Every structure is written in C-alpha cells, then in structure tokens.
Image (cartoon, one colour):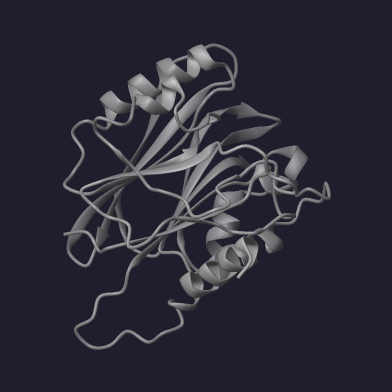
Length: 256
C-alpha cells in the first residue's frame, strides 16, 4: 500500500470510531481539535464560518481550541465568531481577548461539549502583537480537565520567553491537562523544548505538516498533554481550503 493511501486509511479509521455507538459501561475517547482559523478566511480568500463549522462538526470533537478569532470586528462583518461557531456546532463557547482590533476584539476561543466551570486569559510577554493563552477548567463525567490554548509570537526570542512563562503558568495543573495551539515553531526548537520536562508531546501521524493549508511545508501547530494519554497518534486533517492552517485531531483516554 502506498504511504499516502496508508495515511488516508488511518485517518478514516480514526474518524469512523466516533460513529460507533457507546456500549453501556464503555467510555469513549475524548476527541480534541485545535485549529488556527485566520478569522475564518480560507485559502480562497473567502470568509466562511459555515465552512469552518462544517469541518468542526464532521470531526465530532469534545473540545476545540481556536486561534485567530475575531469578535465584532469590521473586517469579519461585526460577528462574534466564538459565539457564532458555538451556535453552529452545538458546543459551548468562550472567547479570550488578546487585543482591541478593527472596532472589536481579536484573540482565541475554546468550544466544549462539556461544562466549563471556570476560565481565564493569561497575557504572555512580548512586544508587538499581544499574545495570550486561554485556560478552561472542564468538567468531564465528574473529573476535571485543564484545557489550554496558546498562540505564540513570530519572533523566536519572544516565543522562547512566552513558552517559559506558559510552562510556569501551567505548572500547577490539575491531574489531567491538554495544551494545544499554534506555536509558530517546529519540533526540536528551543521554545518547544521548554515544554518537554512537564508536558508530553502528542505524536502525529504522517504527514505531520500543518501550514500553509493548501500545500503544507511546516509543522507549527502542536498538542501537549500531562496526566492524560492519547489513544493513538494525532491526525492532521486534510482540510486544505477553510483556513490557512490545517486542523489537528487527537483522541485521548478519558481523564482519571
């Protein structure tokens, strides 16, 4: 079987597992998706939240981390994108503001199938565009999971400083935690190495490249975990149009 065909088969099997009914007494894996949305603008330069929502719904995630989200900005039609995507996907949504922008706000969002008991926005250090991490405490079948999304800077020095602060902010994590997002850096880089003592990198199936979506040549979107284990390698979904990044989907054993 050709390598490309093998990858497609693995992806289909990963997605197909959602359709299987949950047997009494059986706990299904936790499905987690992370995606940089470029405020809903795809590789065809069209802003289309319906298209974004369709991709998310098809992946059937329990938790979603979204980067580059607009809230009531002129460029995106004065729409609260986090609220709109929550409505279109049937999930609960929260927005974290990184900065004022274009008559509204710009930042990140989290969508959840489970109740969010609390959330906070962590400013990250650096000059230029403000960077943040959003942390949500999610209640899953009586267990607590700390779910965090981040979007690090384009400058390597600032990325390193932001990664160091992020590790400190998440040091006191609850027994289970997932950290994901657009880290703007590749495996083995100094900023990503900062996470290795405390966090386990969730491995990716081939191909692992995530950007640019139409023809990826960089692996800059990642997922890390502590106190919770993936059931199989993460899959980079072959969505090449809806945004300039490809979405990542991972399956985890339920939090203990």
